[in-house]
Image: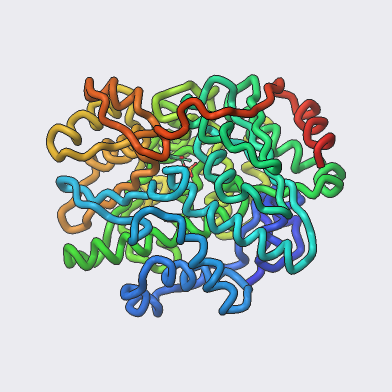
Length: 459
Ligand SMILES: *Cc1c(COP(=O)(O)O)cnc(C)c1O
């Protein structure tokens, strides 16, 4: 399988080159040149344990030798704390897909444990090094650091918005003192970090000189491992309920996780509906309600990993929505750059996309969902998972069981859990042990030259 750009300006490249390139050199996002049809595999895949399923699903998109591929994938899931990797738990009428059993306690581990090993494999074979630059709204940073720390061919520079990630999230990043890890607190919002990241990558001379690589969900290998748990969860819930189709509710920020679900559906997994759930930063929900994509400045909320208004992966969705026509994507992105908004409405009446419905759960909705879910079912949601469950509960249908993605462990947001329940319920030994550890980070202004100089001085 070859990879191309959503903007049409990249000659087809293979999987390993796509992983190293991260963001396409024409400023677009890298996508496979076709979406493989998995329908014929579904029956056989149902019986597989998570790591084997991951090797099979992702194997349709990759080009590594089979034995090495299987070992690499299996090693990527060895550090998870649950034997099912992503267990599915029935909580009232909703099936919760728990994605927080990895080293950093958020769903991003599922991709980043794999990506760290994959980089390592490719770089060793090519005798190369890579300097990874990442922007994080809280969870990508610690998951990426856990995936890449101590790997001799890699350095990682993590930018996060100063004062806008939770103290625990910050400690998870800044307490890692490995020599190849650099934490940068940026005086701005997450969207600033993401803009700086894009500007660094679009400075092609610097990008080449500094051997930059990406672990953000602009990297295709970040999205690919997320496709796997849609298959895994759908199989478990279809077995359990006898249903033939399922729905997924996905708390969304950068459109990464839900894009993986969209891909699973396009591959032939029987997903009847994707429920896109946002917090007050509702640019994506408004798109599915109106056909107009109009980002506003992001506001801080209790689900900080979703405080995003410029959803970088949305371009991949637009590409497939446009029938894989890069010309159309270019026109839409030009509109967005010129006017700060774009429109992509279907010609006639009817929904913007029949597969995707969207809704918003604000702070009071999310707090109430955490409280009620705990009171009624004894189950503790994190604030991101709560946004998903709250919006999911508006779209239930007994014939199509609802699977809602729980993207982080509640202990990462202990203060919000106290606020919701009035009690100190959320703990995890991995986080309790961070108390009082020495930390290291540098404070930088939200300006690309400052970050570029910082990196240049260290590579
Ligand atoms: C990153 C993150 C999200 C949003 O995921 P996207 O892929 O950006 O849509 C939701 N919840 C948590 C806990 C996260 O870390």
